[in-house]
Image (cartoon, rainbow, N blue to C red):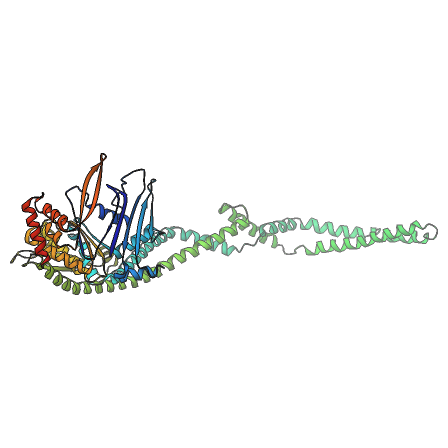
Length: 566
């Protein structure tokens, strides 16, 4: 999978380029030599936040590059194709960390986002650190392993999505009910105001029109008398204006031949007669249109009192603002009704969603119970191969107890992983009862259980780069030889990069890299060396005794030859 790693200006490395063969590669070196520089460089390429990108020369950027062969990983090839990277024979991933502290990421020379790099990571690399021993003791990690082995990931994600959706739905329902409770205190007031204004049936400018009519009717007697008197003086009484004008026109007309200007005067007086006729018609209309109903004035007064009372009561200025208030109350009441309808809908939806969740949780539990039996059997076989021949191992699945008729308590008992708790039970000694792994396993036993897990899971995934960072903690002797064989077998399917202090692992490797630290011009540097033949023998001798002696060289030679004959 990993074919080449290039490091420039990182930690104690000026510049190094190293190629990798298939199988198992061992990285060794004295304590403090900087063995983790290779692993750290790979982790940084994939955007690991736990490692600071420290430059060798602060005046220069860091550049890290790893080349992979995607042909061995169908899952990776499919992902790349879906992302628009077709027919890639070599996958080159790189990171440049500049002087300002910013990083850029590249795929075959094209800039990509950090998020994309992190999505690629689980498809390419399986990191295993010494601290994973503590993770193994946790129930959540054990559950992830179980679900991964049983290919339950899709079902688990469906449950998690449904669980999150229901929790969100219930949170929304709680907020709506709280709002509805608050609305109850206002609903009665708003409903009363709405009905009061609705009953009033107020029309635009109604108050102005009524006030004008009221003023007119209040003076109807005077207006009617004035109109009658005016009509009398204009046309009906003796010596009325209309008759006098007619007399004048008649007299002037008889002298029109003598004085032509009388003609124009007669025309003007004739127009005055027409004006009087129109005025009389208007006066007659004024008198006739005045209501003869004596109760009309009371009706108008009552209506005006209602309108003015509403204006005063609701602290507004006019009918326009009253109608705006009416429309507002209608919207508010509609919103309250919508809120109540939504509450009913959410209650129905959440009930259905809860039924679905219970069903998915039970399905998860059933699959986990079946998977636990298979995984415990597979793990036990592998653990017994690793120098714990009398080991016993069980995976205990317990369904959490809760009343399924009560939604809130059920959800509180569950989480996004379902309704199950898991415990990995272990015994290394014959006759001893299995107990939780955390209480009975030594560091060396934990390392071997982890290795067994890696082996079992690795058989179910495409080729990966498996990085083992001092997984050999707490083992030695014959056990170390068996662990070495075990990791070597792992390397037959995957590319394995293993940091170790054990000579037994070193001689089992397909290739061996040594890390040496030295000083040049008062500055610490690291040299990365691919070992072969005598150099490898000398490094194994150092790993055996801490120093290179004739005896350790002889012992190293025997180990290498013994391994080569297997």
